[in-house]
Amino acid sequence: MSERTLSLKKERNYGKVWLVGGGPGDPELLTLKAMRVLNEADIVLYDSLISEEILAMLPRKCTRIHVGKRCGAHKMTQVDIQKLLVTSASRYQRVVRLKGGDPFIFGRGGEELEYLQKFGIDVEIIPGITAAGGCAAAARIPLTHRHYGNALMLDSGHSQFGEYEPSQNPTRVFYMGVKQAGMITARLLGDGLHESTPVALIINGTLPDQEVLTGVLMDLPNMAQRHTGSGPALMIVGEVAKFASRNQVQAHSEAVA
View: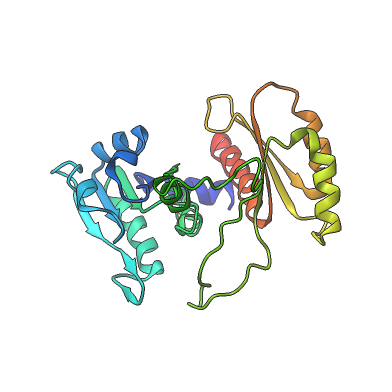
């Protein structure tokens, strides 16, 4: 998107959109940030999985639109929801898209982010406790354990066509792996990943001094060497890592504009 196009779209004076994770159902598992944004919302577009208890917390003055989708019973298509988000941002200053779980874990938040960014709309993501974490905790099941399992892969039970398809290109997330970046890279290459697979190294994630380094798999050891601070770092390997570099380019364009 050119700077001129971005500038023209911003002249339409769109409001801001928050993609908010509502958690697995228990209203007490909402984050403080999610609660604050919901309390300030002018309009909330919410999914079917949002509980009545959470809806009761919304301010009376805000407009509420149910856009939920359940198995075989879609109130609105995904394309309709995305168009409605743009329309809402043209009419309201504070638009909340409230989703069950986490927006970026099988919540189609990535699709909505891409669509909104085409219009130069300011979008903020507020993560939520995903169903895997929330339900496992409720059942007292540790998803990772030093003695029983040191990896976790979240898989969708169906594809975009409604059927189940085994993942051919999973996203890989590595905690505490910076010092082992060279070994991890060698192993992934040995497993068949292409050297140009996108990667992102997120340092001090969510904090004011967050830093995001992006590149490709072959760059990962060098990127890890550049991480000289004491803050925690997370490595993401897979096609979705391209979003990080794309967002950095857009942020630069907005600053120049």
